[in-house]
Image (cartoon, rainbow, N blue to C red; front, side, top):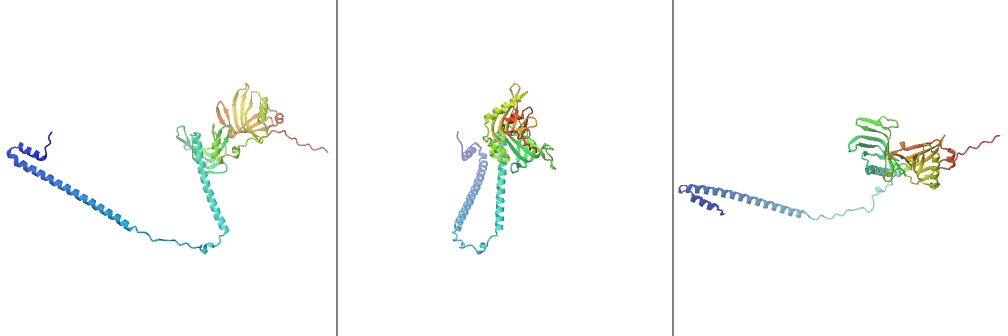
Length: 373
């Protein structure tokens, strides 16, 4: 296929037209080409002007750089002059009382800073521990300041199984109770209330103040290893929970356990108790105790796990006082109410129990009778 140039196309057009139309067509074509030339010249002139303006702009830029280099002159040397000795006005003796006051203010500021850092650390640790135990029903928002064995004030959100807020819990104090025998942590909230919607309900078990706070709320975390909690927030536990010296070596634990089981089985009527595990004896208290309740056929009905067990003398019989633990029945674990559980053995022969030399049950010493004159 042959492509015709504009000039060839014009000649072809003239050849095809008749003689009468030759001059008119030629003049029209000349006029068209002149218009194209004028347009092209205008575009070339505009391009030249733009290029020239760009070159002038670059020239000004390079001249500015040269001017900055010429201004960068070296600065004259400067040597500071320091006196050979301090001015005499600084040698005035300082009042010891003012110095002590200043030191005290500095110590107080350091103590406050350290306290704030520990408060934040305890808050972060509590949130981390709750998340590790998959406690999704509580969201700790504020834990306040750390005191001797508690922290407060405390604010929590109560969430449903889908993480939606149901209400809130506020308390002046929060402390923790650990049970190693039951593998359980109990969150104890004191002097507080729970809010659901517009309803504000104070905790049970105590007087309510003018702000609607009062009572105690206990939240148990079953199947929870207490060691990480004790390690990260030891300030929130009582000294008895932190003490791991559970045996002072004064008793043969195997023999003591056998003696207790013999005495407990002797009291059987519709069932009896059996010491399944004993961690040690500290003073008059049995530590880390596992106690089974058996029916009359010898099958286990329920189990008790306690950090501490005390044997107490009653007017009629003996009481087993368990502290810091839980009660398991049909695979359902429930913490002791208020952290305590009492088992009464009204048919126990106190004299026989005392004769066995159990911790806390030594034979009663009769007062000497005054001689008759």
